[in-house]
Amino acid sequence: MLQRAISPIRRRLDRAGIFLSGACAVHCLLSIVLVSGLGLGEELFLSPDIHRIGLVIATLIAAVAIGWGALRHRMAAPFVVAMTGLTFMGGALAVPHGAKEAILTIIGVALVSLGHILNMRHTHSASCAERCKD
Image (cartoon, rainbow, N blue to C red; front, top):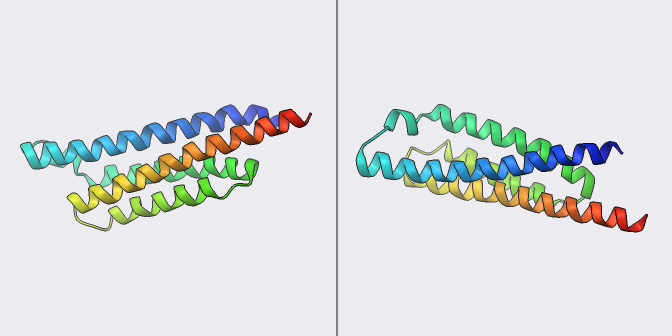
């Protein structure tokens, strides 16, 4: 019963993680175009604080949503994929702004997003299997 109440919350967190991953990828691409191509918004788009805060938020959402999911469906793939993505995102903080940072970040957010998608699929499959055996 409690698991059924928690499942919609975790699903919303997975969806939020996917949305934020996409928003981060768009931010990276827009930053390159606006700052490099047009010379606009360097202080806003390239602020290290935006990237640090984004990584903290991504880590928290992934830890809660994918952690709950892993406990529920006992599948390691979503966790491993998402943590690999978070590692790429963390690595992006260690390089100077530019193409390398954008590439590492986009790889990272793509993997985090994939981890959330896998988590939702595995949890849905586990829920279906549980209901079918009753």
